[in-house]
Amino acid sequence: GNSVTQMEGPVTLSEEAFLTINCTYTATGYPSLFWYVQYPGEGLQLLLKATKADDKGSNKGFEATYRKETTSFHLEKGSVQVSDSAVYFCALGTGNQFYFGTGTSLTVIP
Amino acid sequence: DTAVSQTPKYLVTQMGNDKSIKCEQNLGHDTMYWYKQDSKKFLKIMFSYNNKELIINETVPNRFSPKSPDKAHLNLHINSLELGDSAVYFCASGLLERDEQFFGPGTRLTVL
Image (cartoon, rainbow over all chains, first blue to last red; front, side, top):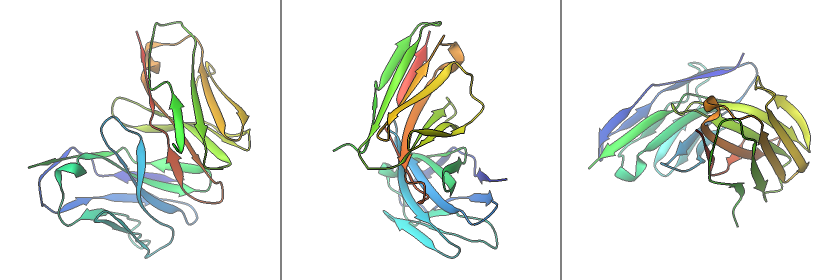
């Protein structure tokens, strides 16, 4: 079946620190992979996506590479800001069905 | 110009009541979804409709009944509300042939 396993939080970093949030998946077929971000009190927003192996999604300084050999889609950012504090969700999409990870809460302190 | 909108944003009600949450999308998408997010932020899909037809119906109590009057709307009606129904409910929409979903702002339901 399809599933997503995401690094548990919460994660607390100082401003300008390097961020990695791990995400691995199991899937039948060839899914698309996503990172969504949820800011406090808001809905989920698409942060980035990759639709096939070796694709790199990037947005707002965040990056993730679709690694078929390790079934991973880790989220990275070189220098986090206070405004990046949010909950991050890894997701796998196969047509009409999405599978979300449990979310990782990130707090960035000045 | 809101893409996916939900009403109400907050809903506080007593156990045993019946309530509805409305969702509308103006993106021209053919598929709409309802998700439940619990207090630990875990997201679970409840229903999915494609062109007004139910295509996903996860294990959800039959007190929950979705209704899709047209492709742009998917409403969620909940009968006999229970304490455990307290959560944030998110509506989302997408195109079936594209692996992407757009989420509404959520409705925080509190059952007292």
